[in-house]
Length: 383
Image 1 (spheres, rainbow, N blue to C red):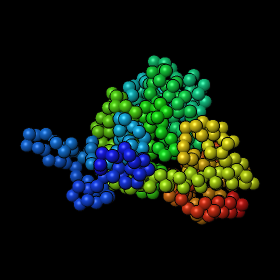
Image 2: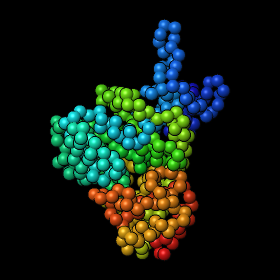
Image 3: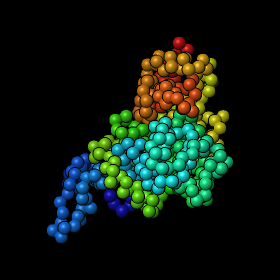
Image 4: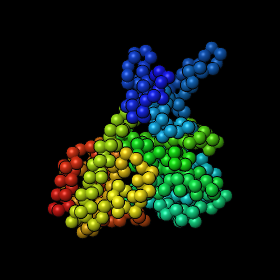
């Protein structure tokens, strides 16, 4: 790529995977490097920069470069074999006895891990409503709290936490701020620019966008000792993403801008229409002015408010479950962020102890015709 790379927008660079061209074939699609071991030089060095496949891979590096560019991550980005592998690597970089404050409403699998495995390893975890900065400030213990973990918008209630405000509170206490920005994506929010130290993505979701890759990612604000520790954890535990999965992820990211724009437009349209639906008691979507976090979302999000929303069915839990069973175009499946629209009765997945209301249906808006999506769900609600 010519040195004039800085001339081009993020959208252009992402679409061309940073402009990489294979030096041998001149192919515009980067090849998949599957080798697990590499030849040493005569002087016993590795001038290629590659030694072994567990800590490093050329295809993975290329996808990491795209993500680091999107997040404006000075330390770079790391790809993991799943979102959970990425998230837990951050907590594993802490020391036994360290105190953590985390969002009460967050990805359920990670919340379960924090309540069980993290505690068993000696970490101390408190869950608070992080959209309430006063509550966050009271929960943080100066000198003891080492990490504040927030998810915004938070799954599946889509509450909004003020990232800049949370960063100020965390840093004043001597802690780092990590942000799960899976549902926002770097197209809508760049947490590092708002003061966060680490941003995490379940790259399985909208970053890939095609429901065919399980992947996770971290991006760091600076390459300090803590970030180096995270890098070493991935290396030693072998949690790197495979080269074929990295290739698919990069293929997905090349259309990230156009997908997220279409999905956000449709999500806002659906949210506005279902807010007036007689069978819907409430719509949860930060793009609606009546949403409690709308003003903060409008300040820290751009290019729309994302593709995720939830509706609470007015006739209760049984009606919500029946509605999800009656749709045709919406797919009744877990996960989110793909080009296909998904519907899920989330409380059934999360089980006892969930903060998710039993009448709630989580909607992941895809790229189908929005009129078809509305008609399909409207008919299911009215049936």
